[in-house]
Image 1 (cartoon, helix red, strand yellow):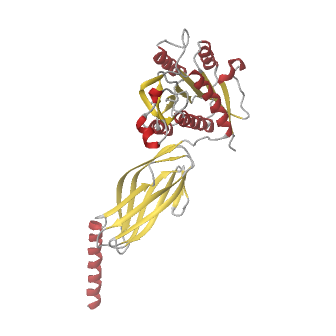
Image 2: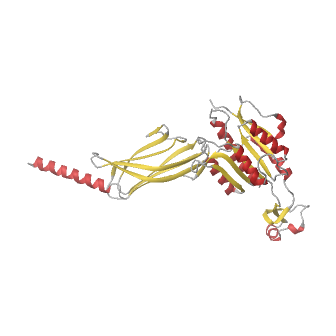
Image 3: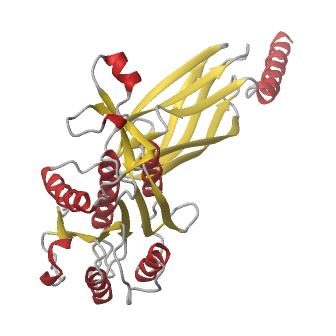
Length: 386
């Protein structure tokens, strides 16, 4: 009789804990993920923080926290993980009453992109491990990985060549209403430009700097068309890196930059278009747009985009028939070397529109652009991945 009562008591206790576990296991249980920053550069190290907080009397002897992230976020700790099309993480924890657990997962941003984590799956068991308890926790976590900067000797040579030409075309008249900064007085400076307040503070003559009446601007044109059925991903990625690096360098030199590309945004599915601007905030705007280009989407033809840009900036329809001299320097980045694009660039040069064409190519790829186009052509060699 005592055995039957004992078994009945145990069975009743089992049913009670099962009911209580199902009702209360997820109450006051907080699970969150966060990155150590909202943005990183390709190749940089970052951290993902996994925080589990159980703020109740009921302990959770077994708690599985599952989530998936892009496989291009390469985590150091591969335990409890599986990598296929995504990185799948399955952490097993034991969380006591009123306990908070924080795990730091280090990873490397191996590729440019815009990465999100949209959900967390929490799986637990009752005290006797007899049933599974599941809850889906919404998550809105994103990380922008900007293209890697190409600060190499080859890039320095390429940039100096373009920058010298742009400086030579810059208008020398300054606008007194466009304040740019303060610098040391030079013998050729006018006394009207002296900033007496700054001079009094520093004990040395200081003068105001003003922007130019017609500042030279750079219009970056990023063409992601390819001429073959082969998808040369590394060439496309290098073209995007060049656009990012050039943006940073030109803006650092005080030259406003705009960007136009037939690469499509992975969210809006539309081609990228950023108006001219300057300053660190504008650099981030362009980097944000570049990191969200999805090269797997269909790329529209680039020549109509070029015609539309020219019509807007010069007021002339199409490539042909342009007259006058543009204030913008066009910097075209394109592996695509088809004849119609070559003829368009030739027409730009004939109409005295300043243009540079940077062509990213592998060492074994043919240079098909005629040399008579002159110094505007710049080949950029890209190592071929094995």
